[in-house]
Length: 317
Picture 1 (cartoon, rainbow, N blue to C red):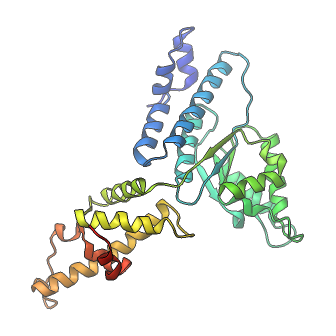
Picture 2 (tube, one colour):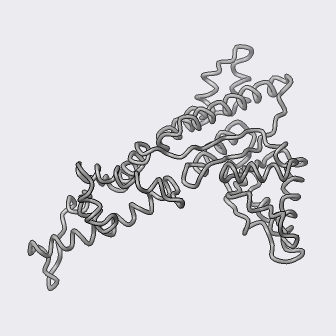
Picture 3 (cartoon, rainbow, N blue to C red):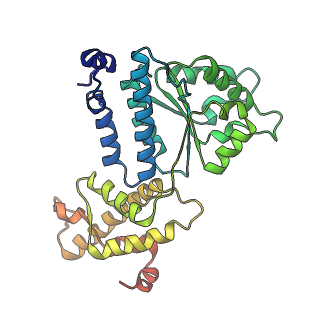
């Protein structure tokens, strides 16, 4: 069970063991979970540890009645979809809860549709409702740049931005806002709303995954689903296919990999059914028996329906 930082400081008197504070407050465990659950993202993980360290030291200074940084805890997460922004936000929320910055440590995910109304007087109640739900945790605004549409005079997004700005300025305890989206788009949003950008204390950039990372993400997701595996030949085809996927404009990193795996599960079921039918194992007039191994391996044939047999033949093993 995690101990409160205040109790640790009292028990340690003037000899503060920083390492013990990391462990006893559960921060080390949270960061360890982040390392285990997310493939790659070395720079992001380093940044999370840095932020956690700064917040820990600042909290210790506060508890010792020393001067603190008084820096904003609101954040900006930039990167393409599927790069782990929501997952990292959840871990940061737990760190902030364990250090006493947040009372609950939950994450409320919202988009423009959750905050902006469609007629006069509709936006304020919607935004306030979401802020209330996020109280004690993090309000994670995905694709935050959509909140502001300067070219549309009848758009109510600016009203939502003003309400968020008021909260960021006046309500500095027990609620943190994270603005998330593509880097160029979020930078444009901040340039158009300097009042918001000036209140962002931490910026974290999430790069796209490389092919090796995407392969490991695929294998990680399969291991979470009753330890499915690729045959060696299928794994080679997977790498080849991922190399094609990353060039698509709509590519969304881990999110695209999850969609691809769902397709693969469907085509695997079709392939297994055909194989069992041809082998005479399936008799639709009686009970059907399928061995676990029939479903635990993906083969090259499972990729044919996705990639096409001609493309597979062009690929040299």
